[in-house]
Image 1: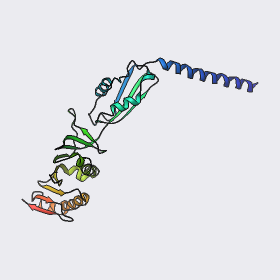
Image 2: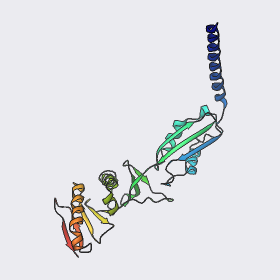
Image 3: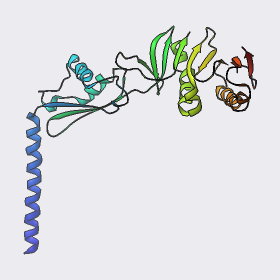
Image 4: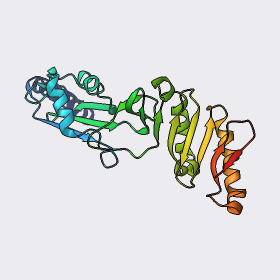
Length: 242
């Protein structure tokens, strides 16, 4: 008897699950999107894009999902459209059972500001170019002079990553100047001197040598003694007095 009751209960439960599944499937075919919720996850740190910007982009591309049937809303298409914006690093769009489209957006992370012959733009932490914003300025090292985009996204990008990881040099280097022959000059925050790096070859070794010079020699002679500190020659630091 107990076995028969168990079979009947299991059968009824199975039928209920099948009914509910088909019921909601049929219901979802007709329900519409009644809200679009946008979350810019890093909006407290950066302000390159806003919720209004993203909604405006979708409206312009005729992809605003509001009042459209949910089964006609293509979240992949929404993601691809928003990723055309060079301020955006990633987008995740998904549907909820309550008729809401949710967007989770991350902005790009700039690590260099380029103001040079190839224009005015940022380089982000993945080595791609992103435009400047009228509403937000990122506090990153500024590169000026004869800067071509090829240099910006290769050697300068690698140099900027090094600065990010090195607390001492990240705090010390304020500006970078590129000469016409692609040699590099650094402007420090502390000290009234210019640093001639030369090319980017062995730049880590050059800066390590300079850090030792700062630690051992500068306390004896002071920050104001030298006008130029030249690192371009292998294993040498050549200083020019004022």
